[in-house]
Length: 286
Image (tube, rainbow, N blue to C red; front, side, top):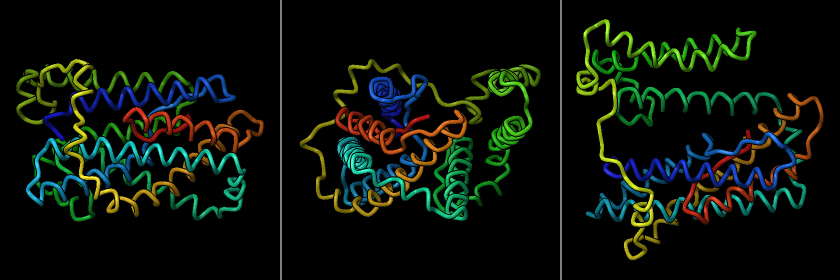
């Protein structure tokens, strides 16, 4: 997907806009924020890997991979949204209150581990999907690339747990990247030097938003791959439903008053349905 990454990034941003529009129109919370979410992306990522591996393994082209991915993933997102709306409409989500704490803890640990692994993968520029992939850090170059990210994660974790002022965390999020460039300057490293070493992403030409329309060619879509993604989609439905219930419960706790979980889930489902129809990805309420 790398050669189309600029256009695909715009698609993710547009998808977040659609989720925010859905939250603004339908949520009972005036401050609700909607955006592409982590839990659903885990499963969409697995689907994308399946699609790419299958098509390229059979001698297909990158264009076929892009078109198929940008059709099957939004179909999964829209159908997920439809299921969430049904669950909320029939008020089936109250059962979540009976989940034992170890189940909730296990879910949070899984999401946290995936985010850590994905963050390290972004730092070193290599895909990490299995436990054995952590062996990449045995390479001194990869370890050096990952070290600033790991240190930043540690600092942000400590601040988020210990800070008593609401301004400290966002301030730290500004200072950390600024500090990176200060260190580069003190070490007499130019931006081009940092880019060639792997500290900064490669330059790529700007892509107009109109290019998003050209990404999908329905003639190139491998519709048969929907069957291969159904199992992953079922897992996504369970995890996203659970994650969204936890988010709603967390907002309710923070507000100090109960929220109608089922009603808010209808809003989340509606925004996902809208996003899927517009070639977007799964999202949630913040």
